[in-house]
Length: 135
View 1 (cartoon, rainbow, N blue to C red):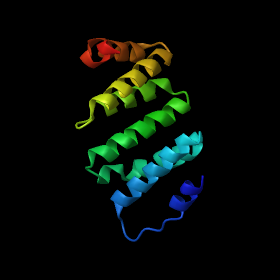
View 2: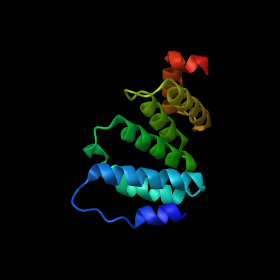
View 3: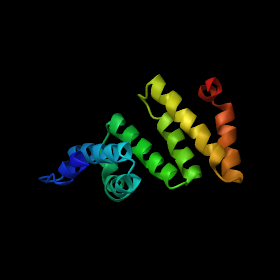
View 4: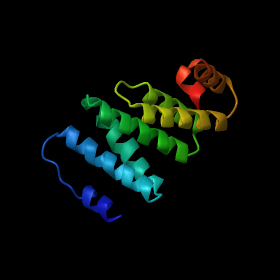
């Protein structure tokens, strides 16, 4: 909690979007580590979402998508969480271990999502995805 409070107190000069995104992603990650998804949601949805388009760093974009999916997952919005996990797995530069974890999370949240055409579409996509067959 102390790390979160210290990062919340950082004052930025000018735009410095890259630094803000990095620090706010760290806050969200720390919040998930201490099982406080409301703090993570506050930073992911209310702050990072508005400036993430300023970065071209694939690592930060992937971390944002992962945090956003975790927020959706913790809110029990499994359909949107599964879509975000799947989007993150398709980003360029994602290593094989992360892809396996993302596909696994996609499968779990898709199974937990309510039935309907969106779930059927996600299941069809996962059925045809070669990466999901190893899970």
